[in-house]
Image (cartoon, rainbow over all chains, first blue to last red):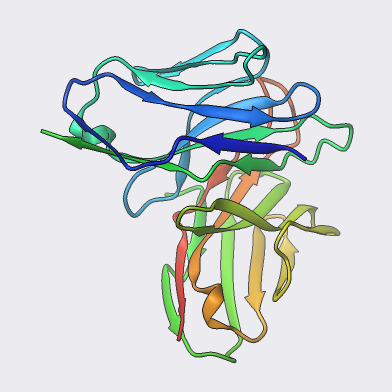
Length: 115
Length: 116
């Protein structure tokens, strides 16, 4: 079945450090891939997405490239800020014939950025 | 105003009690979802609905039931709550189109449920 695996957290960085959160997936066909972010006390919100191989999603300085050859969608940011402290979820949506629109989530990675 | 709202935001209850969590949306989306979030497990799908007459079980539906009262309202019930249903519950919505890359879901703020 389809699945998503993220690197375990928590990830603790100093402000302005480089961030990578690894995400790999298993899926049949050609899924769409997403990164969602959950700030403390809030629901999830979409950070970025990519719908086909080699697409790069980007938003708020974050980037992720859909790598079909390595089944990966790693999240990166060149210089993190304290305000980036949150839980990050990688997810996929399988474009099966049933097109249910269901999302399959990874377990989440907590990022803590210290001043 | 928030597009997806959930009530209550927090609830503490006792084992065996019936609990209803409510979700409303103003986005005009047909699809609605209920997830639970547990530390280290991410989000797991409980139920989903494509319209008022189309309700489907997710991966962890046992012990839960749902009602889609209208396009905008989707309620989750715990008929007889048990402690391992203590979790953070999220409602989400999406539209039916793949246009623009498909199936972004919009989440409510969550309900923190504690079952003693």
